[in-house]
Length: 67
Image 1: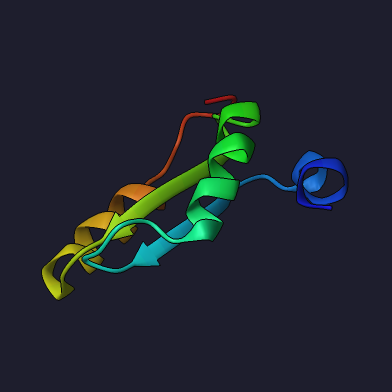
Image 2: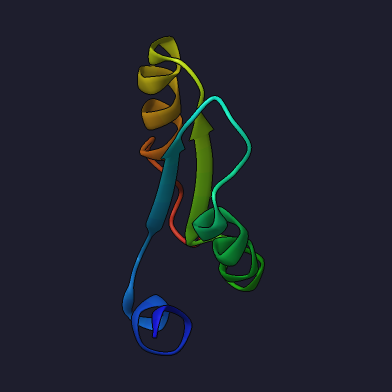
């Protein structure tokens, strides 16, 4: 559903996982989506509270059109 219906219509999609442990199953599933839509699908892991602001700032910084 995500790859066939949603991603072609979305400008940008992010998945943020908050855990200091190994990635969850959803992360592993989303890796294939990220490979198929590298310019529009971003994944990041937040390990500790201090990571929240820098991660979100990087994910949502202004981007040049087409990039």
